[in-house]
Amino acid sequence: MTKIRTFLASDLFNVIMLILACVIITVDQMIATPAYYGLAVFYGFIIAVVLMLTDDIISIFCPVLLLVSFVIQYKNSYDGFMKYLWGAPIIAFAIIFHFVYYRKSFKRVKLSELALFKPMCFATLALLMGGIGIMTFAEYTTKISLSYMFCLGPLIILIYVLLSGFINDVEGLDERLAKIFITVACFLIFAIFEYYGENWSKFISDPNILPFQWRNNASTILMLAMPFSFFMAKKKNFLYVLVALLSVVALVLSGSRGGLLFGLIEFLILIIYYCVTDAPHRKYYLAIIGIGIVGALVLVLKYASLFSYTIDRFTSHKENFRRLGLWQRSLVDFKANPLFGRGIGYMGNRDLHPSAIGQLCWYHSSIPQVIGSFGIMGILCYGYQLICRLKFFKARDNMLSKTVFFSFLGLELMSLVNPGIFAPAYLVIITMLFVFVEQFSKAE
Image 1 (cartoon, rainbow, N blue to C red):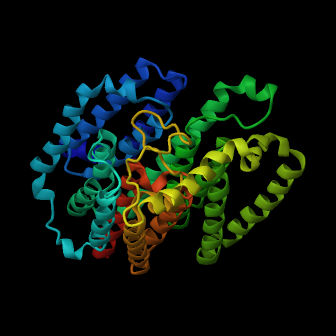
Image 2: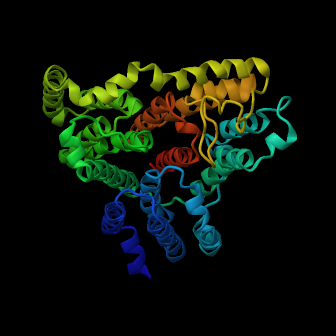
Image 3: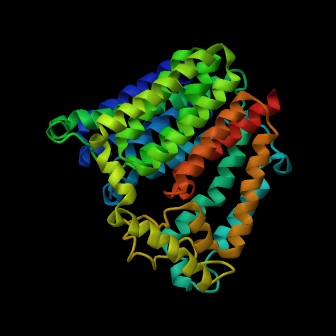
C-alpha cells in the first residue's frame, strides 16, 4: 500500500492521467456519443478508487481537474450523464469511505482560525436569502435553484473546512500543486490543438479562428493554471514558461473574447511581475516582451484576417446584445426587489439567455449576478468576502500565495464576462487553492 500511495502521489501518475485524458478526447472525435459518457464515468471511478486507496486527498486533484477539463467540451450533456446516474452512489461511497476510514489523518481545525470561513458564511447567507420577498415558494425550491444554492454555499464551506483538516503534505506542497495545474494546462493546450488538427481541412480552406462551444470554460481553466508555469519557471526550470506561452497561443486559438482580452492582460501582468522579481531570468522575460510586441505587430499588420472571427465578435451587435441586455436586466431585477434581488434560480431572463437544461439563466458577469440575484444584501456580503480575500493574500508573503493570487485574479477577470466564480466547479477549484495557501503559510 505504501508503494501504491507513493505512486498515486507521483508525477508519473499525473502523466498517466494526462495521457488517458488526451486519448479520450482524441478517440471520441469531439462528438458527444454514448462512448464518451462511459469514458467520463470510468474516469470518475478512477477518482473513487484513488479516494479509497490513499489518505492523501491531493492525489485526486489531478484526475478531478482533468475530468472537469474534458467534460466542459460537451454541450447539452445533461441527458447523457443522467443515464449514468447509477454511478453516483459509488462515487458518494468512495468520498464517505475516505473521510471515515482515514479520519485519523484529519487534523482538528478551529473555525475561528480559518481566515475565510466567516466571509464564506456571509456570502452563503446572501445566496440563500436571494429572491426572498419576490420569488414564490415553488420557484425558490426548484431542483436547479436548490442544487446551485447548495453547491455555491454550504458545499463550498464544507469543502473548505474538510480540506483544511486533510491537507497535511507541507513539504513540497507548492511544487506538487504547481505541477498538477501545469498538467491540466498541457491537456487543454493539447485539446485545442487537437480540435484544429481534426478540422485542419476546414481551417486551410478558410484560415480563421475555429469556434467551439467550450472556449470560455477552457480559457477560464487556462487562466487559473497560467501563474503556476511562472512559479515553476522561477523556482525550478525556466523552460516551464513555455507552458504559459503555449497557453497564450491556445487562448488566441480558442476564439474566446474574454480569454483573449483578459488572458493577455493576465499574461502581461505575470511577465512584468516576474521581470521585476526574478532577476536571474530577467533578460529572458525582456526578450519575451520584445518578441511578443514584434509578433503582435506582424499578426495585426499581415495576418489580421486570421483573427477576424474573434475581433468581429467584440463589435458585433448579434454577439453582444444578449450580454448587454442581461447586464441591463440585472438593474431591472435589482429594482424589482432591492434588498434581496431575484434569487440565483430566477429564470425570467430566458428570453435573452435560453439556458440549457440543468443550467442557470446567468447574467454572464459576476457584478450583475450579485446585483440582480442578491440585491443590497449580496453587494454587502460578496463585497465583504472580496475584501477578506484580498486581505488573506496580503497577509501571506510567499511565492505560493502570490501565485494563487494571480490565479484568483484571472478567474475574477474572466468572471466579468462569464459565470466564472458562480460556476460550482471553478468555485471549488479556487477554494481548494485558498486552502493550500492557508495551510502552507501556517507550516512555514
